[in-house]
Every structure is written in structure tokens, then in C-alpha cells.
Length: 247
Ligand SMILES: NC(=O)c1ccc[n+]([C@@H]2O[C@H](COP(=O)([O-])OP(=O)(O)OC[C@H]3O[C@@H](n4cnc5c(N)ncnc54)[C@H](OP(=O)(O)O)[C@@H]3O)[C@@H](O)[C@H]2O)c1
Image (cartoon, rainbow, N blue to C red; front, side, top):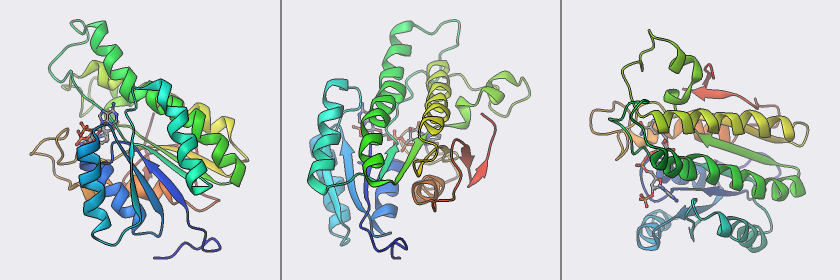
């Protein structure tokens, strides 16, 4: 598949790209003629994942990136922008869920902090530092990998399908991540930078577990769609299966 917009070779940064949904997003974007920078916090795992996609003939590059290392994020983004002369797409995919069995009453602040550092502060800083590069070229697509578990509508509904789920720190972090989507979409409106949240559905990964019905490639569908939206595509929304869902 070719880029329709003047054959520009778009450059994408995907965080947590070494496994799971992030790996499939990287493969999907590279298959759409993008140059994909695969961010991973572990160099060995990141390089191995990158080599696997390079062996498929895809234009992917490894970049060491721990999204909790706030001090390094600007340097990493500027290095990517400088190397390729552009940064068109950001997929904030890296995420952790470390409090599955914990209730809101029992959750400890240290776990909330750890979860927020990965799922919220990292994406926040990445948005702040990538947007200037996107503005430079008058093009940007930002996808924040959220979860239906973070929907305030679901959290507040006692009849919700997710009512029995715990993971309070994770749910709060994804709710806050949705706030980033709404805030930044408003900030860049009119700049041809589209900012959206995606829920991949329940996906068979280390996080989703073996009982999940969707493959990582299926989970990657909505984020890839949002990362490749046309200029008149939606912004400031929360999507699952390419459809708008409530915040
Ligand atoms: N699976 C689901 O059913 C599901 C449902 C809704 C939303 N999501 C969201 O989708 C995204 C991807 O999930 P997944 O299922 O693919 O999870 P996964 O298999 O657990 O993979 C998580 C990825 O994030 C990376 N990561 C974690 N902390 C990081 C950090 N500090 N810096 C950089 N990378 C870091 C991991 O790297 P390491 O290999 O080094 O640990 C790994 O590459 C997450 O944001 C998740 O919340 C998943």
C-alpha cells in the first residue's frame, strides 16, 4: 500500500514496540510505507523485535526508550526528528497494569505513581515534544493507547461489563490518558494534527492473557487506522473497532 499524500515517507514512533500490540502496530505502519522507529526500554528485546521486522523487508529502526525516563524523552524525540528530518506519527502504546487484584480502597500510592509514570507522564511528555516536529511539517497523528477500562462512563456504571474489574491505578491512568487526548486535540486543532485515543479490545498478549479473544494484529487495527487518518479524519475522540465510544 502506498502513501496517497505525495508519496511522502512518513516517520512514526511507536513506544513499547518490542512485543504485543505495539509490535503489530509497528509492522502494520511499516507495511503502509512508513519508516517506523520502534521504541523499547530493553535494548536486547527491542533489537530482536526490530530485526524480525527488518527480515520481512520493513523499514524499521530500534530506539532505546524507557517512557518513565522523563529526562531522556526530549533528547530521544529530537534525535529521531533530526535523523529523519520529520516525525509524523506518535503511538503512545507502552503501558503497564500491575494492580489487577487490588481494590480502590486497598490501592497504594506507590503503585498509582508507578502506573502513572508509564501510562500517563510518558505519553504526556512525548506529546509535548513530538508536536513541535509535527507542526514544523503541518502533519501529525497521535494515538494514545487507552482502554475501555479507563472510560469514566464504564467506571461510573454499576451495570458496566467491566464492573467486576479491579485495577484501579490502571483504570485511573487510562482515564487521565484520555484527558491528554482531549486537551492536546484542542491545542492543535487547525494544525492538521489529529489526536485520538484507542481501545484495542481484549487482546491475547502478556497483559491481556490467554483467554482474550483477539490477536495482537486484530488489536492493532484501530490504532493503525487512527495513525493513518486522512486530513479530514476525526480528532479528540475515543475509538474501539473504529467506532466512537464514550469517555
Ligand atoms: N491486551 C489488552 O487486552 C489491552 C486492552 C486494552 C488496552 N491495552 C493497552 O494496549 C497497550 C499495549 O498492550 P499489550 O497488551 O501489548 O501489553 P504487553 O504485551 O504487556 O506489552 C507492553 C509493552 O509496553 C512496554 N513497556 C512497559 N513499560 C515501559 C516503559 N517504561 N518504557 C517503554 N516500554 C514499556 C513493554 O516493554 P517490556 O517488554 O520491556 O516489558 C511492552 O513492550 C497498553 O497501553 C495497554 O494498556 C491492552
